[in-house]
Each structure stands twice: as structure tokens, then as C-alpha cells.
Amino acid sequence: MITGTTRSAGVIGTPIRHSLSPAIFNAAFAACGLDWAYLAFEVPEGAAGLAMAGVRALGLEGVSVTMPHKAAVIDALDSLSEDAARLGAVNCVARGGSGLEGHNTDGPGLIDALQIDEGIEVAGRRFAVVGAGGAARAVIRALGAAGAGEIIVINRSPDPAQAAAPLGGPRCRVGVVDDAAQADVVINATPLGMGVVVTTDGEPEPLPVPAERLGAGQVVVDLVYHPATTPFLQTARARGAHVVNGLGMLIHQAAHAFRLWTHEEPPLEAMSAAAVAALVHRDRGTEHSR
Ligand code: NAP
View 1 (tube, rainbow, N blue to C red):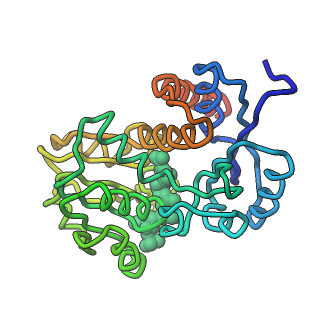
View 2: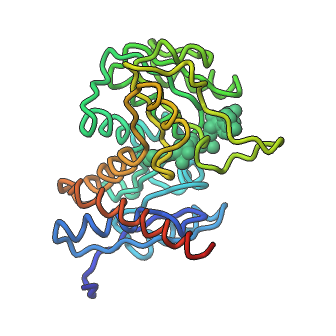
């Protein structure tokens, strides 16, 4: 029950109505018996600073930050974690000794999804990361920090790839799509597969990596989690690879935020079940509106 002593948290972004975070965090608070509540706030582009002033005035305990505010919010914060500062992006704001602290939990979220959920040790393995945007940069930095043996950055545009590669440290380099065949783990960190990329000739979205570069013995990861099985994962599975979608990363990045805010251990099963239920609910809603 929400009372006068309930502590509050939320997510800012736009569009925000399809965010899974309210379901994930409210399930986590309930599972831990915490008197907390989490809401989604539709904050237009350019208003991240205003939103942080609101967070200070209203005393929110924690805020998740999503598109398009991950970089813009930085100027409105009091301090940054090393990851957030290096990436120039914040996905989680917590209250600390110095005021509002910006963190980035996306990369550690993927590492936990691989190591905890899938039993895939990162240290020493060869990775190919397709994409060089915000998610890819966070993943590249986290893979480097976790001791990946090699990280190959593959991106449509060369400049973002060149800018991202130093985040992975000395074993990270820019490569081409054919290099994915040599990787133990291939990660799609582009929106290809979400069904949002418009092709000019009416063709279906291309795969991030051609099918012939994928095969048995590889792990193929898509940061996309809706649909649960993208054409990329479908293709990789058909070619004998072990496939992992982005839901684990989403849950584990939230788990890191939960720890930062509450200083308690996150109830991963409850968070995961809530996310899956919210996705099913969302799909049913889409069917009804057709
Ligand atoms: P972003 O910053 O906009 O970066 C997009 C990247 O994808 C860029 O490298 C871009 O290449 C590339 N790209 C876009 N369209 C492409 C196309 N048609 N063909 C080839 N490459 C293309 O986006 P982001 O925030 O990194 O997000 C990337 C994906 O990760 C999204 O699907 C997002 O939903 C997902 N994600 C998942 C989680 C999770 O928890 N599972 C967390 C964060 C993000 P250029 O440099 O050439 O433009």
C-alpha cells in the first residue's frame, strides 16, 4: 500500500509508455517487502535538467534514465561514476554523499547476464560487437574491464567505431563484419531486429552479421529483447549457435540500480518474471489494437 512514508523512484525518457522498468522495479520492491514505488515519467528531449531539479525538490530516491537523456542529464548531476564519466552516458541516478550521482549499469548488466545467467566466462574469450552507439560503448568498456581476450568493434560508420574501440582497452580493435566468424561471442548492439529500421527498397531489415559468419561453437547475443527471438537469433540458432537475447541485460542493469538505491540484494527471479509478464501483456495489447 502506498502511504505517506512510501519512498519513490522512477524512469525518465521519451517515449516511455512501453518501458518495462515500472514492472521490474515494483516487483523487486514488493518481493523485498520495501515500501517503495516506481513510476514512468514522460520527459521531453531537452528537459533532463528540469527533471533532475524535480528529483531534488521531490526527494526521489533513484531515477533510471533512458533515451534521449543519457548524455544530457550529466550536466544536472553532482558527480559521476568512472564508467559514466568515461562513457559520457548515465542510465541510473542515485543519491549519495555528494548529492545526485550518475552511474552507467548497462555494461555490467550484460556481463552479469552472460556470466550469471548463461555461465559464459568473459575473461579470455573473443568478442565481436556490432554497433558503436550508446549500448555498444557500454558493452565494449565492460568487456574490456572483465578481461575479454579480444574485442572487435564492427560498425556501419567508421568514425563511431574508432571512437568506441579505446573504451575496450588494449585488446580492442575495429574490424569488419567477416571478423565475426572468428569470435567466440557475437553481440548485436544495433536496433536491427526490432523492426524499426526502415529499408528504402521495402526489403526486410538486413542481419547485423551475415548467416555464413555464424555457426556452432559460438554464442550469439542480441541486445534486442522484443521480439524475444529476432531474425538474427533465429538464423544463429539454425546454424547451431547458442543464442541469448537482451532481456537478461535489461534485468541485470536494473539489478545494479536496485543495489545502488536500496543497498539490498535484488530479487532477480521476481524481476525477470515481472518483465516477461509485462512483455506478454504488451503483446496482447498490440494484438487488441490491430
Ligand atoms: P544508438 O546509440 O542509436 O546506436 C545505434 C547503433 O546501431 C549505431 O552504431 C548505428 O550505426 C547502428 N545502426 C543503426 N541502424 C543501423 C542499420 N540499419 N544498419 C547497421 N547499423 C545500424 O542505440 P543504442 O542505445 O546503442 O541501442 C542499440 C540497441 O541496443 C537497441 O536495439 C536498444 O534497444 C538495445 N539496448 C538494449 C539494452 C538492454 O538492456 N537489453 C540496453 C540498451 C540498448 P551508425 O554509427 O552507423 O549510425
